Length: 361
Image (cartoon, rainbow, N blue to C red; front, side):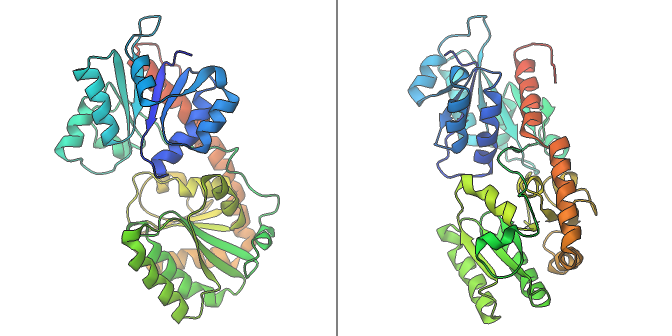
């Protein structure tokens, strides 16, 4: 197997970047000889199982050896990188070791980079920005390609209005937030909103699904104590870190997904919730205004605003049938606009541009 593209993901912890690579790899491997250099993920296993003849898992030394020569037709092999350390490594391989490779970088940040990341990005052969706003901070953007999700991994349950019962938790319906427990993710905003709303809605239980790193443990404990002081420890549940292959089931379980970070470059949680048939209420950051069809699949509210979040959630929680219909329409929107296949086609167009080929997507 002689890969045309090597995708890197060298961070050990599963992050949003990991989630993107995890979803894209099996789809890219359907049509492209591709290799992966990085940590174990379910998508890597799936790509190997489904696309063995077009997919390879490489060690660093194997990737290095494969990159010492051009492809049989003379093209340079592409390294697709998504983090600063990966850009640094790839530039070293290309410009210091003089390997015949081209570099593609995906940029999601919605702020002006400091000088060193700007220098790194300026030295890429192709740059993908995930939103037009992100592209405005990267002058050498080749193409805007929004993230997509696997509609096979994230899908609705048979009955959104009864599925909560399988969790064994209190109530008839679930409402959930997914992601790290830390201030920038707005975990405290969500908890404050739930403390106000749950006494009004005894049929609902709230869950918080996500890892809390040691440096944020005090932040989490303060939330736990606040919940306990209000007597709601059995209805605001900290689930902890959920395995990547089990996250979809928890999205299925909840009727409403909340995404209220203070800042997000793009943000996949509203998409994952919509794909699983959830109504979505999100803060105005990342690509959330593009993802959520206001008043149809959910609502977008100002960031860092508990009152606005409560005001948007209350009417959705009051009408479970309406919430389920929002979720149905959200699934349709995800299918039409945000599939991982659509993202893969956009990424392939950037590869074609770097190789000097006519774009087909």
